[in-house]
Image (cartoon, rainbow, N blue to C red; front, side):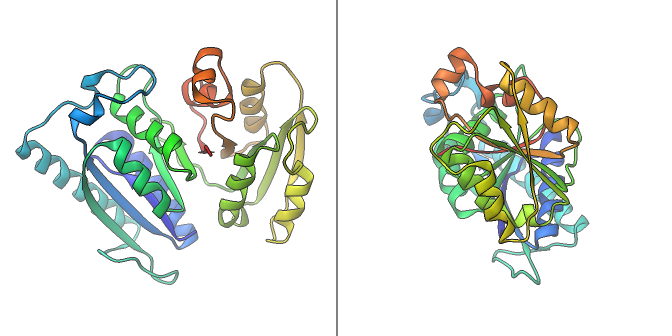
Length: 282
């Protein structure tokens, strides 16, 4: 894993997310790409993202936009300095990774899908239950339109060590691709547990087959099966019982609209818990 991307704004939740992103990047010898976005409100009005209001990202003046960009840059460079990262306009190497800051002008739902695929992972903040539609726009754009692993962090101060990792497993395509993408992170972990609800019921590889795949990369893992009607709650409670720092999970496998109407694992993870997760939607 060579490149971790993160939207940057001078906000408290971004300070937390930057701290986590730089810490993980330092462990993996990866570059950090920071992106400050000044969206176009005219396009943002057309977003269809979980009851967002048209004024979620209000117009600002050119002076305000420049000030916001400069504040974001200073925050990013300060965090880079604290982690002894060289700030550069070019990518670094595994021996000398760089921190790269970029200003992006446009609408999030058009920019985030361009940013995601050129990073191995994105790091974003979970929006507050009430308000903070800006964070919701960024998060949902990342989840739905990048086909890239997205680390979603709570807004409270938290720093997952990524040493104990739970994988929510249902044999789906997203889980397979996410697990493969996260191999460099799993290689650094002390404990990896697959949490599977009931019997293997999808057409994809079983948990044991994926565990054998990981062995080739030196990753030892184990399997924990759970049973019950409330799968989402069980996954989180089991991950906590296993003392996991973070959980990997496929996102919106039932379709986002269906989950919004009837509930689902992804929707529960994003709205009913503050447990840190890495999600992938394909």
